[in-house]
Image: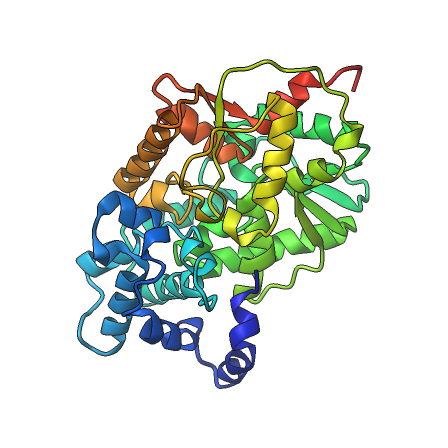
Length: 385
């Protein structure tokens, strides 16, 4: 998928020369999208809230109305804007590829600049600046570079996988060894900047992004493998929004495995009926959903029972857009809705590749079995790896 800068690159360059902000750069998007309803059916938040104010055109209309002086940023209007899940579905299902998700995040950054951000952001920003993540202090000496040896390929671990699902990281490392990829673990316990970016804390996001790129360059890394779509989207699309250049090639572990599956010596699995959950941002990574299903069929011995909202309509479960911090009630509603959608397929198992989504689905599963794709595959590997 083309990034917003391809459509607006020249205009953006001129605006930057004049010292204008990203928010001002995206004013044509708010104005143009405020009465367009074409992508509304793709918005997972609108499906849950059943409220046009919390839909792509609703958010565009809100920002345009503030810009025109018809509304102001106050507790109510800020709350509405912070209900966007930043999943990318509106742009991914737009006939003209309008970069509305990036425009919404730029508006949030403007709100923060004006000192109008949600109250919860200050404490979160303090944690991100102190620890490099929202969870707590990292317990080992050098979380950015897990060893000092140069490495041309790294596996980005990040914060949520390190703190919430370390067993998935170990499974990923085992799988990479099985497909003959020498990848050093990197960035364990550290945010890559997505969370502060999506919440409008762009100064903190730039700081974390620059530190990540500097460490990758120092390590000599030419390729970064990510555990899920969120990290890949951040490196490929968000860093340019923040003005950070990342020279490394970025690929998801799902894509690596799909391309090297012939090297996996797997035991045959017999399991119950399963469905596949595409993590948010899947729509922003062409080919990711198809690769995930190919790998899932190896792991599970057959094709999934598909949910209606999948692939280019990947449904977030409260782990994107910063919803788990700024809108916890909405985040929980999205997760519960997804579990119900999985049940309606008749599946006994819900499978996913993303570590954070795995942990969240487990929290709301209510008896449905939740499996992580990497853990399933790693458990089936034969021989001593």
